[in-house]
Length: 298
Image (tube, rainbow, N blue to C red; front, side, top):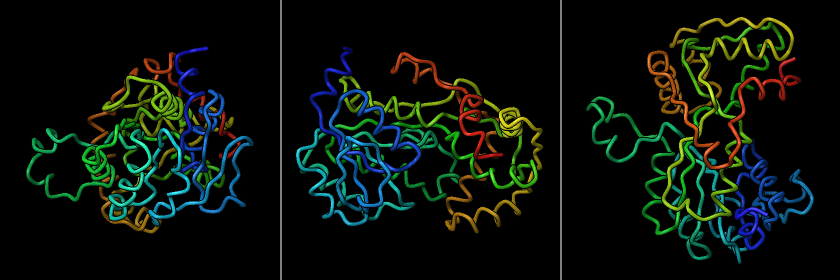
């Protein structure tokens, strides 16, 4: 039994976002390690979660609804489901009444305080994204925190699936934007260790896949996984704004995404070995992810 396993058996952990792309794998990792897993869900009767997991009703937009789920827990895995942080202070205060340990699913795009001070003045006028605000609130809350900062999720390319199924094409901006996409299982594996073992308090882990690929190359890898060619057609930024605003609804989020992809053309996302350092297993490749999800693109 590993050190992580010994800690896990002694811990009760509340997982938010337990039915999401990352959260469901966090639940599985913790359950396999022997932890007592409690999943926060809005409707326990409709939640599709594995046997052996305790379901508790709660909603992060209603902080008082979290009390029952937090009773007796040793740590919380927090996925913030909103694009703003108005409700966050009350949620963090409620968490802090019951436990000290929190692992937050953040993003690699977050800037630390020193980086914020050094940003050009024009950039500093841009409204910060919610991950930055959440990290600041958590750091000031008195909780013992770990921030997971993954690069782009491989699973986000499922947004291309309707186009690929219909026409074997990806129409998206900045095809040469280069990303080190990460498999959601690798994020979950790091989260489980941060929740069940010592040495992670105060850490900001940048989590990436093992290799950076352009978006054009990502489309090609998906094509290899499904056995047919997938071509990439670049969208101009203005056209991409219209498409993404209709899909996402938040202009600041759309602008940040377009700007980020544009920067990744000349400044590719970093590749780190953090997943392997923490889990002992190399991060999964985008090709492995695409093979697992091939049916979604066929």
